[in-house]
Each structure stands twice: as structure tokens, then as C-alpha cells.
Image 1: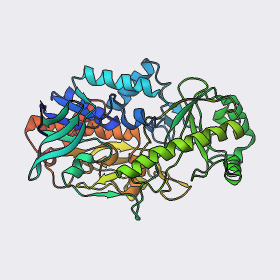
Image 2: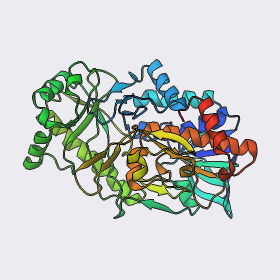
Image 3: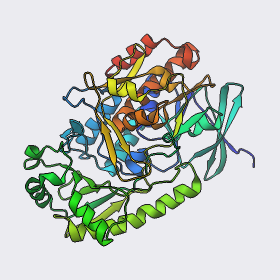
Image 4: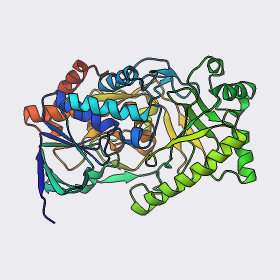
Length: 451
């Protein structure tokens, strides 16, 4: 096969999800030509294709805002276009606020934001090879509907979520916990005609059935709720054989419109998301679990008797795959201590959230200190390659730390930082390691980021 098409830009970004769009917008607004490669025909990544929501979290548990800039701009655009009620109280009590959103509106908001910022979009493209000379990327080979295509650039950003580009370059990576098992995958789906009032009435009369930090005093007056529990009803379903999902509770959140619920309860364990056969089996298992779960909800759970399946995600949601090795690795201790860094480029405030890779439990560990930690710039710089940055879910972090920094708001913040740094590399004709951190931080603050 010969490459029949070619494209060229200052910055080439792979992955049009939360981190990739933020990277592309930041780099383009900084004066660079940018090509963003996305495998689907829309932007949004996990948030859109996998319907993973709500977005969390822009605030510490005490309510201090720690993420602004492009991520906040996207939230405001969602609100303006009827795609989100904005920041709502987390009634589960895991964080302070989160952002419910309609995935279809998110696709439109991200597309509009990218286009207005001057980003050139390549949809339905999948990178299969890197053109490389020693420690420098010269270009990417992309398979498209029209055949192979070569993209040439100066700085490259891996926002694929799975670290695809860094891996193709031979950068080392880790996968999963100490046993090599990644967090489980989940197929999320949306239900309509759910009676939220019945759910809250049951919760208020059976508080022992739910996550211990649930804000019961907020439930009655909340238009949007999050629910983690129904423990005894779930256990009864296991005993009767009605449910076969390896987890210990139901988890769901109100959608944007009244009567909608986004159900985050399926769980596919012992599957490697970068193994094509495992990923295929996960997609099959997720939809099989969806069917049995829907029947269980209608039969056993108050408020769901008349529910209707409105939409299932286009693909399973992936919590963890490759974690690329960078110049610095964010650790569990960094997150839990609320560590701060002189070379910080983003903040995170979501607790460490580990879905047991081989069992039913969920482990939550809250952040200490003043409720947030910082991500240093070296977490975005992969080993070995001089003109590549990594951002989003595949940045350099330990398994436990990724349980926090994989969250969408934090991914968008690290994405804005990567795009900003890439633009400075172009302007100053420097490698990624050579840019002064003070310059990156100043540019981020000027663009509204909280650093």
C-alpha cells in the first residue's frame, strides 16, 4: 500500500476526547496550525462515545474551584445550548459538585469550539504507524476510508486515552494494578420515564441502603441526584439469579431532562482494553449485562417500573489502559497528600476511585491537605521522545493516582496545558523538555486556567 494523501500542521493531536479537544483549542488559539485526528465521526471521546458522565470535578470537596479555562468554557457552552444544568450538588457525597450533560449536545459544543478556534479535523482516522528518526517523530501514518494518509508535524500530542502514539514510538508503559489487571470496563446506558420522586422517597426511608456519605437532606429538593446503593435489593437479585454483574451496588445519575437516568452499573472484569479480542468480548458482555440489568431495575427498584431504554453507549467506557512512563510519575501519595509542585500545569480534586479489577468493591480515598493536588508538567513528557506530549487518561501516573486524574475535568485541564506547551515549542523552536515552566504557567493563567 502506498500513501495517497498527505497533511501537514505545526501540531498533530491524536484523540478527540476531553483532553484532545482542549489541547487542540489551546494550541490553535496560540497561533499554531493544528490537525486533530479522531477515530469516530464526532468529538467527545469517552464522554460522548461511552456516555461517561457526569463530568467531575471542577471543585474541591469544600467547594473551591480548581479548574477553569477551556474546560469551564465548555461547561458554559453546554449550559447555553441546553445540554447541561451546570454545576449541581453531588448527593452521593463523593465530591462537591459535578456537571450532568447530554452527550449529543456535547458533541455539537466541542465541534463548534474546535472549528471556531481554527482546528482542522480528520474524522474516521486511526494511526497505525509512526515515522520516526531516533528520538523524534517526523509523521504519522493514518488509515482512513480513502486509504492511507501521512500527517507531518513538528509537535505531536497523544490524547488517545490508550497511549497509542507513545506506545508505537516504543515508550515504556504500565497496565493495571500490581497483578497487571486494569480497572473494569462499563457500558453506560440512558433510561427515560424514571420516577425520581419514588427513588428519593425510598432513599429517605431506607438510608442504610446507600453510600454512607449520601446527602439525604439534599435529596428532596434536588432536581438532579446521584445514587450509590440499593445494597439489600441488589443482594437479593444476586441470590435469586436475576443479576450476575460482579459489583455490590447500583450506581446511576439523573440525566439532563426530567425522568432520565444515566446508569453506570455494568462491570466487565478480567479484560484487557488494548487486547482486541478482550475488548470485543467486553462489548458483548456489556450489552448482555445491560439487558439483564434493565429487567432487574423494572422488577425490583422503586421508580423504574415504567422505565424505557433510550440509548446505550456506542462503546464500553474504559477506566484504565496504558499508563505511559514519563519524566515524572504522579503517585498515590501525591494525590492523597494534596501535593503541590513548582512545575504544576493542572489540578485535580476527585478522590482516588478504584473499581476492584477482579471483584465487586469500590474503594474511595479522599484527598488530604486543602482538598486538591497538582499535576507537574513532566507527567506530560514521555520518556525517549523529544517532540511528543501525553495527556488525559494515558499521562504518567501510578494505578492508584490514575483513579483520580483520569476524570474528565482533570483530563481537560491537562489537555489545555499540553496544547499550550506545544504552541510554545513551535514559537520558541524548542523541544518539549526545554520550555520554561514559568512561561507555560503564565500562558495558562492568561487563558483562564487555575494554576
